[in-house]
Structure formats: C-alpha cells, structure tokens
Amino acid sequence: MGKVFFHYYFLQIIFYEDRNFQGRSYECMSDCSDMTSYLSRCSSCRVESGCFMVYDRPNYMGNQYFLRRGEYSDYVSFGMSDSIRSCRLIPQHRGSYRMRIYERESFQGQSHELMDDCDNIMDRYRMSDCQSCQVMDGHWLMYEQAHYRGRMMYLRPGEYRSFREMGYSGMRFSSVRRIMDSC
Image (cartoon, rainbow, N blue to C red; front, side):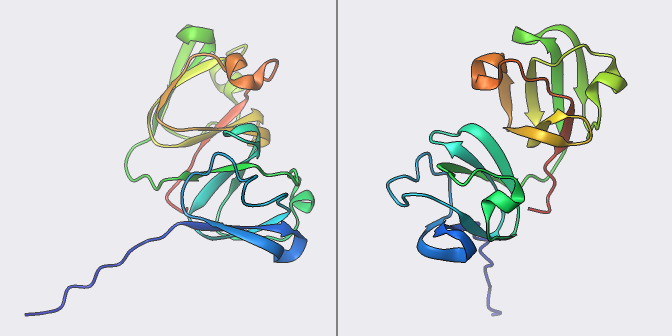
C-alpha cells in the first residue's frame, strides 16, 4: 500500500508592536476581534500565508486594510493607521462570484447584479449612489473611489441593509472588486 500524504494549508499573520518587525509579537491564524490584550500597539506585520482584513478599531470596526502575503514593515508608509486593533481572516473561495448592489438602503431603488469587478459603479450602471447590497457568492472589496482607490469595506456572503448604519455615513462606494484565489 502506498502512503497517503496530507497537505495542510495554514493561514497566518504575525503582528509586531514596533516598526520593522521589532518588539513583542502576536501570531494569528483566525479572526481576532480585539488584539489589545496581546499588544499595546501594532506598527508592523508579516502575512505568512493567506489574506486578511485588518481594522484600526476592535470588533472589526473603523478603517479597513486588505493585506495579502508579504511584509508590512511600517504601517504609516503603506497609508495605514498604526493602531491596528482587530483582524479577520479571508477564507479562500473557489467558485462563482455574485452580488447585487442597490441604490438605496434596505435593498431599495435601482439594482444591478455583479459577477465581475467593476471599476466605476456610477458610470457603468448610472446609479446615483450605492447604499446596500446582498453578497450571494464570493468575497468582495468595495471601495470609496473609482478604480479601486480610497477607503474600503470587506464584504462576505450575507445581507448589508445599510452602509450608513454600519458606520459608513456620508461615504459613497464607487467600485467593487472580487477577492480572488491568490490569497
């Protein structure tokens, strides 16, 4: 009989209190809603494998930053906050991508179904705004500005009735991108 080998894929991110991977560290392989009990501050990290969203407030709130495999020696130089307080693992997704965006809250107004990236929602769909959505398949990033720029929001399968109630009052989302298998 031949031997059976199992390959386990571990997703891992290591946070450091100081820049350039110095000071105390905290290794994370899943979601962490509050890192303040592990580190007093967080100024650099290494993503060993996988993709993560990191947040500058506990409980996955505040500004969000998408990180894929690589080294982030100084958050400020990457345009990020130096006070990362929570992180969320983005699971790998194989299969189709599908979401429906709505012009107004509670799935009201003009709507469009997306199965691919859209670099400018307002131009492509002639929507005046995007205030709610339903993600049926895949994981997505929605951006404040066209061409995938500005602040972002991570969307996993589920219903998002009001971006305003989620803390994005006054923010307009203008582009959306699938998080592909490269994580």
